[in-house]
Picture 1 (cartoon, rainbow, N blue to C red):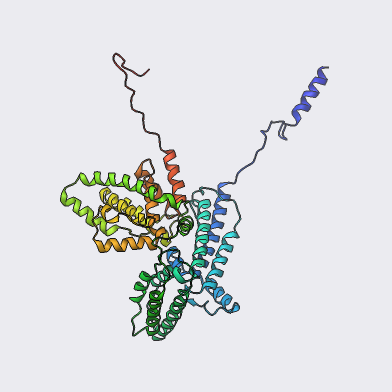
Picture 2: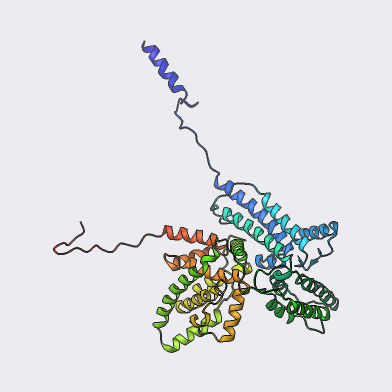
Length: 468
């Protein structure tokens, strides 16, 4: 019986016995990737990202400037060959990017950029091991995909011309380079003249307007580049655009329609908003900022207050780049036009004295109300005492480019959502440029990680001397 029991016990233990003298092994479980494997995957993503950004730089000179990138020669060669095969006469590369009116070729290049990114299918870590090419690979891929979605939607809007031509012409001005040879001047004159006439023709669309057009101000900036003696065709075409605008008898809504604002905020800022609730939401934020700004101003001398107001006037609706970050191509990019004011708010709060920053933020929020309120009390609410002509110009900008000014106001709201303001500023600076929903996610993580404030001691009547 003893021998049988011993044999049975040995059989039960055999499953756990190893080949080395019967040592018992722990059950094996799923093993995660090693740091070396995660570093290799991050490198593969960085390579896919480089390829995608190369195509993006070829697609749009504005993207090339934002990414501080130049399209590789092999990409430019592909772009030119694809345009020839597609019989796209507009698909010629100007410098190292396609011209902004080459809508078909731009769409194809952005499609190739999306394919280059989609070719990488590996699982990515949230935080890469030390020595990796990118600090936060999963976030990097998410943000680059967002850039591509945003820019493809921008291309679709710009290709319609008409009231959407303002952003397109601002892009022409921003990427304008002086021709080096006389023939280049002739070619540039023919090019800009041809496309301005296309803009003129598109203004004859009888469709109802969705809001005030921002084309007029963009034309002023372009007009300063088109010297009549150098660019006679361009100058003539620009005059014809203005004549077409003057002849347009369609009713001009005072504000951009709610659906357009909602779509723009979602696409470019990443936030879901209810346009009907924005006036009350902005008024509440303005009241809070006003209290803080008045408190900061009241603590200084009269001359100091005037200096603060003067500096604040220089920074109203100022558009800047977010502070650059290391170990990220996407978060170090310049912002799209719709988030340039949000980055400006971050820079003002980070780099100006607190009283000046509060006055700027307050007045930016007041001006943002002009984008969603038909008759806002702008003049009587501004703390920086802006003269009437400047108020008119700033109000017009808010109405013609509502997503831009709402970006600044909603950025201020994020920073003042609660918690330590300095910690939230530091977190955004460390994040870099990103849609506001991603910023909100990062700032929320900072607030959640912060220890709660200590509760005040509970009072108790004598002879109580200690908490129970």
